[in-house]
Length: 229
Length: 79
Image (cartoon, rainbow over all chains, first blue to last red; front, side, top):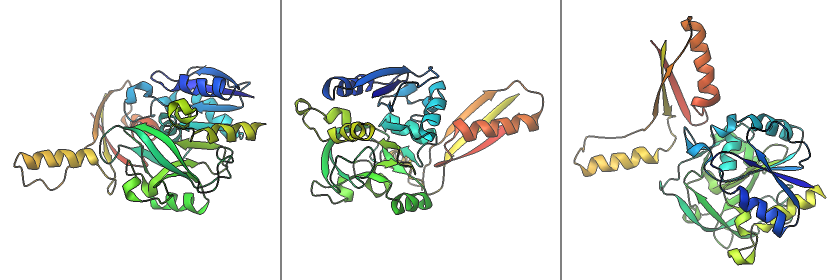
């Protein structure tokens, strides 16, 4: 089992993901340069957080036109597991692999803090190791995490249980007070129709070791590992 | 030829930057301002002879990269 971490100019959570997979979960991992045109040998592709292309034009927009993204789209279409974290989520929406868009936070500020996140769907390859409606502590670090999609898309996402994660109170209530960025219906992470592509704003790789203050993100990696085993 | 591309947020899409700018204008006593929406303006220098053909190409550029049609509209002017 091998994880591939795509490196765009401006990615800055690529090493965090590599560390989590290689040293915490003891699985094979490698970097994939954004100009590479092959994903051969990889079982799961991660688009990490960061500021690809300096967030020019729109977050994730220019990265979505990188040569490697053609391969990532093909990989996803064939059922390969693709995880986009933060900027990776933004890139996935820009590339059309996930619906909607991530807009500027409603408070305009960059928010970097631990937040409670509720697991709404624990039957995806990225969440099976969590309990249904379990609330976990995972940090966010973004200025553009305000999820938006038209009403029809939101209905489709809700009807097919494609909202994997939602910002909530520690008790599991998705209230506006606990919505850090204005995301519609407190959406923090969604999957594609087939369930093999997940985009999420919280950073599970930053919550995989007790030394980092939380292990709430471990479930994401443990779920992928179990799905690939 | 030169093309101008205007990218604006769709109606109903929240524009917190516009709101913040409006707040600042009000603070400066420009009380008549009812709303501010912030968008993008791009100038493209294009090698091409046919305006019709290039307009279709620029439209494609907007659809695929220059605008995000989930949240934005675009308008093209060719000179």
